[in-house]
Length: 162
Image (cartoon, rainbow, N blue to C red; front, side):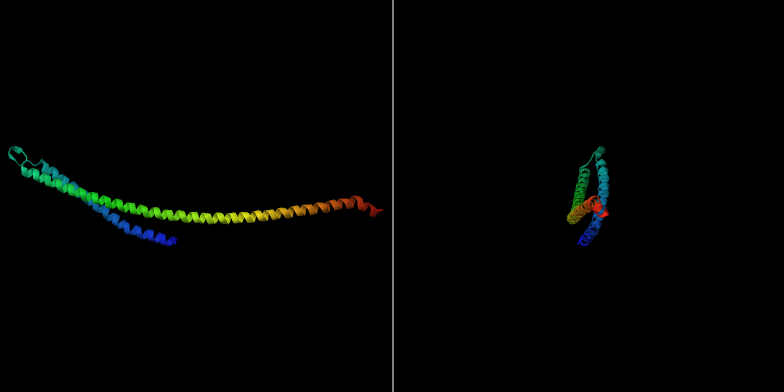
């Protein structure tokens, strides 16, 4: 299941990366066109073909037309920026979902490991308890044997030596 998520993430990344690169290149092209149009607008703004060096109605109309073209280009640039923003949002959403999946998987694995550790602790405690009980029993039996031997050496053995 994890491999499917990784493969789907790679496919999505491969799908959106060319789109983003294409959109980025298109945005750069639009920006260059806008700069060129702005330069043309400056030229048309400085034109003064009228009598005594004044601007004519035709000069003003040309300037206005350049301004309208620049506004159209600005609108295209805004649309491209929106598209790039949507692509980035989509990529972030997919990355977030993948990280969320990884975190959930890790949490499940941690819970499994905790349960296994608790089971091992219980087994260790049981074996420690049984070893402790065996040691106490051994100590009690050894004590009785030692006491019996001392009683034998001090009280019973002198009777056999006489």
